[in-house]
Image (spheres, one colour):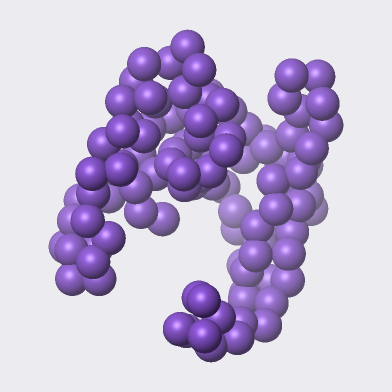
Amino acid sequence: MQENWIGKSVGVNFGFPYELDGAKKLLRVFTTRADTIMGVTFMAIAAEHPLAARFAEGRPDIAAFIEECKRVSFAEADLATMEKKGVATGFSVTHPLTGADVRCGSAITS
């Protein structure tokens, strides 16, 4: 549906390695601007992402933030003026090109 709405996007997928519960995985991201990947220093994870739900286990602050996100209007006019909010998860992934730690937070808007 989104492809029909905004049109086809051509780009590249990057995988940011991480380990969680003893399993090695990749957090995949898509960008139409591969040249910007070197500048990644932070990653926002949508409140609806399965990782956000996993981070909320035992973390009332993250769980409350996710609940707040469910009540937010995502109308284009509202997004343009709303305050950007996020919560630290204490989670990080590894930059696929530099090997640097990249902190991840959950955010209402990215």
